[in-house]
Amino acid sequence: MMKIDLTTLVTESRNAVSENIDMLATMDMLKVINQEDQKVAIAVEAIIPEIAKVVDLIANAFQSGGRLIYTGAGTSGRLGILDASECPPTYGSDPSLVVGLIAGGHQAILKAVENAEDNFELGAADLQQIGFNNKDVLVGIAASGRTPYVLGAMNYAKSVGSTVATLSCNANSPMTQIADINMTPIVGPEVVTGSSRMKAGTAQKLVLNMLTTGAMIRTGKVFGNLMVDVEATNAKLIQRQHNIVVEATGCLESQAAEALAQCNNHCKTAILMILLDIDAELAAAKLSKHNGFIRHALLDQK
Image (cartoon, rainbow, N blue to C red):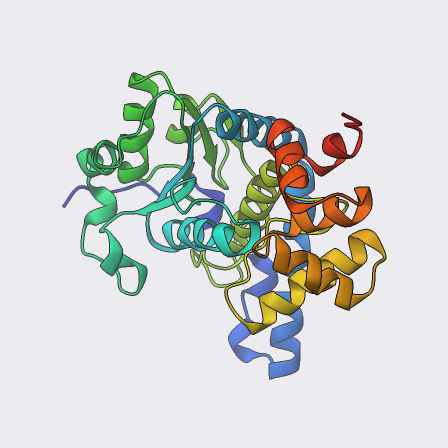
């Protein structure tokens, strides 16, 4: 087996703060973990300029018929899948708009697949299988910055002319040499040496939240701070729709329910109906004309 040198990776180094964590009382042990976790948000703050660039690229891709594709292995792959899977119920987006790929495929979501992350060719093959093209944006996720599966996907994405970004926690990694934009929150050594599902995983989750939330806001799926494209797929979300229309318009809940019933439970349409005192058909037409942006539609007096 080929030897891999992990000594240069900060995520694999020992943390002096937690060297004796196994000897601490439970309360003190948890305090150490919590204190280390507090460093994560600061590390993410330091790379907001890079995150902002990627958000704008993703939003532009969405508006041009492209997609956001995450690729990763292990924890990183699962975090990408988690973020992708939460977009349709939150923002009413098509399930194909944000896609998470993981080394080893669907079974790897729940259980590690032997050697999958070391398969360089598999990263490219998985992108080919979903018809990845130059309209799409690829975000390669790996705490180490060296995962062969992710590197294979990134090389393929570059070969078809796509924009490629990385999300890793080690500077100057092989992934950073390929990408157009590098998002590299340096969170330091883990509390348990090498357990990158901890601080590194938390940093990745924070950044992924920013990427999709930011892109959805930039494409008109948020009005104020309300998720106005949420789909009513269960009782909680039906009530949330009612609450959103009430919050956005100041109307009574009975009015919100009536408007939603008239427009097939489409929050944006119901909001415009109430704010402009128009029917569902005209409200839908205004939204379509302005690419789903409520604020732009509100200014349309025609």
